[in-house]
Every structure is written in C-alpha cells, then in structure tokens.
Image 1: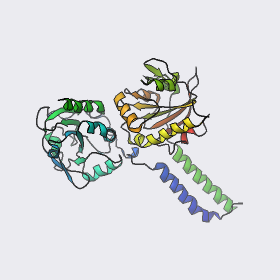
Image 2: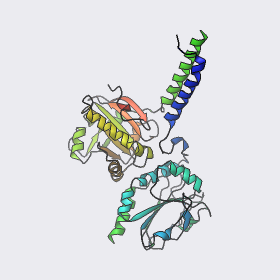
Image 3: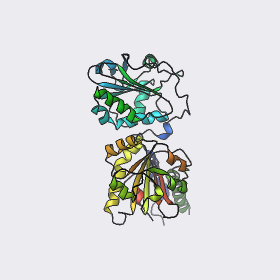
Image 4: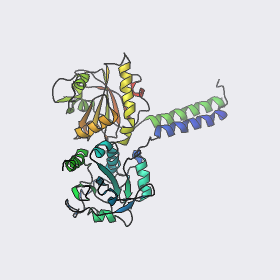
Length: 203
Length: 185
C-alpha cells in the first residue's frame, strides 16, 4: 500500500525529475556541444594580403569584455604580443583554441609574452562564448565595429566578414616577427607559437 | 486502484525520463579496431612498466597488461577535459588505494588530434599521474561510429588473445571519481 496519496507526491516527483534533468545536462563552465554551430568545411584561406614579418604591427584600440579597452601600444617596450584572430564564436575549432591557450599561461609568461584574442563578433557574443571556457587569463577584444577594421588592417578579413584563423607574434618594438594565416578548418599547433616566442627571447 | 495506477504511472514516467537522460548517444565502438591502433609508447620507464609494455617505441592497446583499462579520449584544447582532469586524477588515486583495483584497473589518456607537446602541457598543468599518449592523426576516430566528443571514457575488459570487451562508455563529465569504477567485472 503506497503510504502517501499520489496527488501529493506528484509535485515531489516532478521537481525531482526536473532536478535530475537539469543536473545531468548541466555544464561546469564549458561550451555545451549543442550550442556549437558547425559551418562545415570552409575554404582554408580566403584573403591574400596578410601583413608580413618585418613590418610595424598596426596600432589598434578595441573594446574588451569588461567594459574597458585594449590597445596594442600599451605593451610596447614591455611585452611580446601574440595576437590570435579566430573567425567566429560558437564554432568548432575556435571553441577549443583559446581554452587550449588558457592552460598554457606559464609558457607565454616564460617568454615575456601576452596573448590577445580577437574576433569580429560583438562584445556580448564574445562575453557569453568565452564565459563558457572558464576564466581566461588573457584579454579578448571585439573587432565588431567598424566591422572587421583591425582584421582588414592586418590583411586577414575574409570575404564572408569573419577573420582568418591567424596568429601574429609582435615583438616589444612593435614589429611583426611571425605570421601564421592558418587553414581555417585546422587547429594551429601550440608548440609552433611557443617556439617563435622562444626565438625572440634568444635575440 | 486509482492510487496504485497513478503511482505506477508516475514511476514509469520518472524512470523513462531517467533512461532518456542516461542514454548518451548512439556511439558504437569497434573493439577490434580500437585494440589494434598503434600509439607512441610513453617515454617514462615507470609509465611503460605501469602499462606492462616493453621497450618498443609504439604499442597497441591490446599490448597493455591490465584486467580493466579505462581509456579517456581527451584533448588539451577541450575545456570539459580540463575541468574533469582533477576528478580523473582522483579516480587514479582511488584505484591505487583499493586492493581490489590496484594493479588490475589501469587508466590511459589518448589525446585526440594532439601533438606530444600539447599532451605534455595538459599533463603538466594537471599533474596527471597516469600515461597520456598523443594521437596526432586522429587514429582513435577510426574505431568510432560518430565524431568523437571529448572526453569520452571507455571502460574495457582486456582479454588476451581476444578483442577487449567494452564494459562502459561514457561521454562528458563523469560526475565523480568512482562513478566509472562501479560494478566492474
């Protein structure tokens, strides 16, 4: 004989079931796979005029995700800069690239370098997306308006309005020392960037 | 009569809901392919010994000496794998501390699409005590019927001379250090 009247127990079961559903689907600071949009395989590189090594990196000031601004010049004379352009928030390779750099902080610091993440997405989009990566140690800036202006200055704005998956290493004098406009579909290897930073330290 | 029917109806609804939640995805793993994939051997002698491997530069999962092998397919770039790393370390500790598991249940991580450098960053960041091997060319994907979602945990009963028997497959966070250790054969 069931001890309680079912009608009284129903709300209890319902709330228990809702709790189970919620908990089993909860994400502890990660991009829920359901929220990642797969654009399929894209043309590897869609711009031809990326800036080359040896030239001065164009100065920029862009909004970050905490209401402030980040300028390239604030690191002049102080730090090497790795500029990581990613095409778009909420897409597969991009959703993993910065979380990878997020656990490599010591490698950047060891080489006296900062990392700046940049995409053409607007601030709220970048905020929501990067929040799901956990707490990032590096600033992320939005190249949304004028749309892709900095990406265009660096020669990495694609025809569809997103940037290339590109990495720039800029030394303390503000000179570009390494450029990788990568196949947009593929993850650039971490060791290559670290090796380029180590080269700067040797000079 | 109505009470009992309502109770049973509730029970069915509740349990079916749990079943739907628990079923991760329709992932099928080919045990034969999995056990014959070749990976670089760990460089560390103690890790080679842990897996029961000789001096060869590469090994197959079928070469591992263990009763149960828990394989975590992870990526350095995966934030869920990063969040889960401490729990998997705890699982390793729980195994080492329990006489019924120690020496019989072993853990290995396969870094899908990761280079040795990247796997090493992950190992150092989380001080991972068990072997991690790089899988630069996505070999492990060949054994899977669907695109791998990291982390994927495969609990396999190794059977020398035969293909391993998959005991459990879990995609995503485990929810605790001993969850995968429940009801091992």
